[in-house]
Length: 325
Length: 120
Length: 107
Image (cartoon, rainbow over all chains, first blue to last red; front, side, top):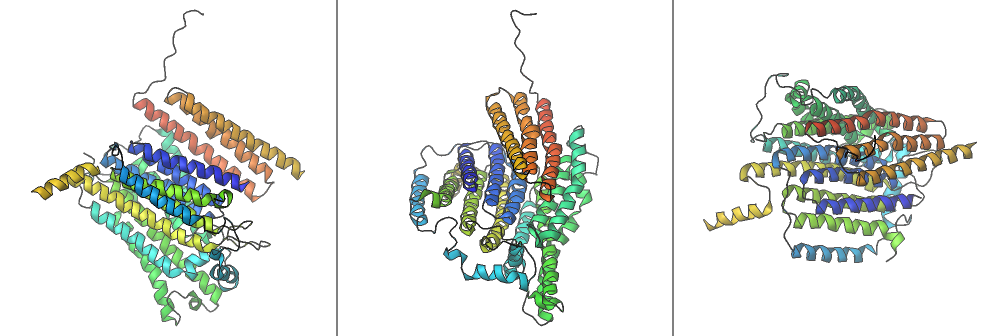
């Protein structure tokens, strides 16, 4: 039964990818890429990966699409047709594809429990998470504790991307920032849209906090929570205007949030060093190692959530401020 | 060509090639970025397919379940998804800067401007 | 009892899937934006409801069913709003529903 769903979803995914290739209207391509992201999130659910599915749905189907639409506002909607006979592209694609097909036939069969990928390391994590860290969600345990250093690097990557976007867009013509309320909000007469958006905002924010806190017990964690949190502010900005959204979340807070999240993460590592353990070894944070692990994981997830949310909101505000004229 | 056993893997190859073709053959920079997204997501599908264990549950410990899917690729792909959105955001920003500086984001027009600059 | 619940539930879910396919074919075959939005609205209200209520019944009464019903409530609030917003923008941009052709005979 799952195989059937798997095949159907992958077929839709291929259809979406081919449609993206053939379209010339960038708006349609942006919408299709949102569909592609949501379909791949469904594929991940069918493949027993709920954490990954949640992240892909929030990021690929939500934020990416909004950022692409904000870009199209400045860049224009039409794309020129490709070269009449893109021979080099076809040759390269077919050659690499054939090599990959030849290589893929050597991979272990789908779902084989004796595959080399399911070797000692994975078994160690699955078996030892209960006693060493004491949380049910093994993915969060590996992400936040066993491989916490990788996650520190990843948070640094998203901070760097945020800094890069803000630096690059700072030199483009900005819209004049007028007083809050001087300009009519974009959807002033869309009563239903405004009322429903206002109803949804507290739910979204509460769900973000839930996902943040529940990351140890169910699919969730810092990244997903940060993205959902940012989505609430994006929704407000899209329906009520960036002017009012900026009044609620001033730029200074966003900058402090971006850097502060990574600082909290690094500080947890420094604190563990000062208490005598290795960098990011949460065992030394409390008298009982398992409690120490809990404290460490909660602290770094908060840092990650703060950085991700701040970066996404700041990037959106930067995109939305660019003057299309 | 064991199709049922390797279906996910062949779909991965097809999606990756579609993405690669979009990156090479498109002349519009934003379309190239979307092609890159397709390419990245196909790699995610490969890793998660490799992680799946037949008859296993998602890697969240539940009482009474003894076979779980492999959590390690899930962690790697979580990182990869976050990095991919960072790359996309930065790529879109660069596209906007190029549009502002040169007036176009079509590769053909940009190449023509480069050729002009070289002649001078 | 569980078997009856499961059969009823899965039957409703399959009915929801059939309704969604009909709505999708409507979206392809209908002539313009507003009639297509009628078709899309069917999926929002009836298709999603049948699928989610069917799965909630098939799963028995517990937290999973409660979550499915909450998802249904959320869908019922948000997707018709999106449909409404689309229709409003389409009208604002000047698209009109197609004129009905005058009948030669008839009352």
